Length: 94
Picture (spheres, rainbow, N blue to C red):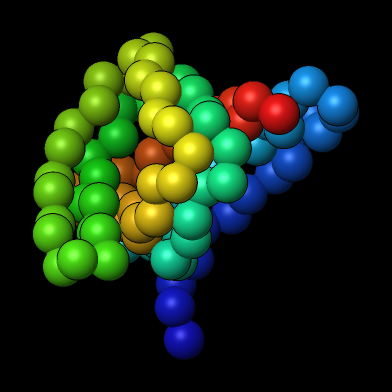
């Protein structure tokens, strides 16, 4: 069984879907594909491993309070490789 993170839907209206993701150490999102453009705002420092379907693995640290965006079509699995919990907010643009 996959040790998946917790997600909480905060807003879902005709313009945006806002979700909070909370990960303990070694928890992951599970494989998923983004169908909408989206923004991520980190609440904590996030030490992440990003796995791509082509087998590419990238490890990054995103500092708390940072914001980044991605376009629809991204497919990946996100894993907390840090020893502390990590959290971020995802805003999907409809």
